[in-house]
Length: 123
Image 1 (cartoon, helix red, strand yellow):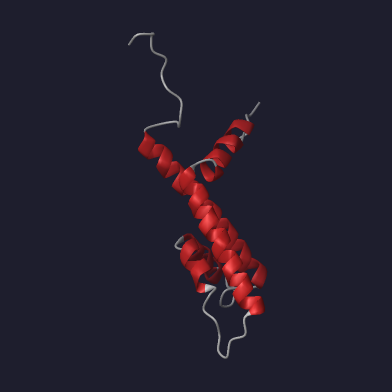
Image 2: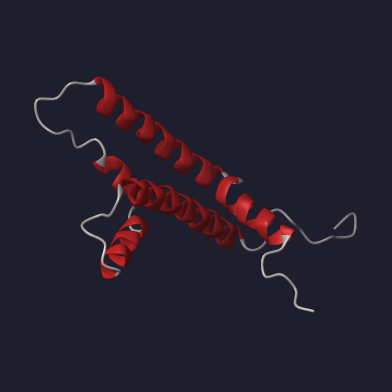
């Protein structure tokens, strides 16, 4: 019988890497604050010309968001595709980058997070 590829432990590890460290939380907080800023600027601020506030979200989601856009254009979608695709690409890109940031933090700490080897007392 084949074992499932994605077990409960794998999902827990992915969630911990994406949301469970300070670097990922700070990154996600900056993205959330920027999203609020862009939303307020778009809905409540009158501009004579177009506002470039939304560019900040794409800069925070770069470079993975541009990989999604390049993939969609290779599949024949016009320009950036439908609105739902742009929003989905932004969300998935931010989560992928948060995961990569968490993985990098774990790599720099030297292993599997906070687990330490047992040592005899007095050593």
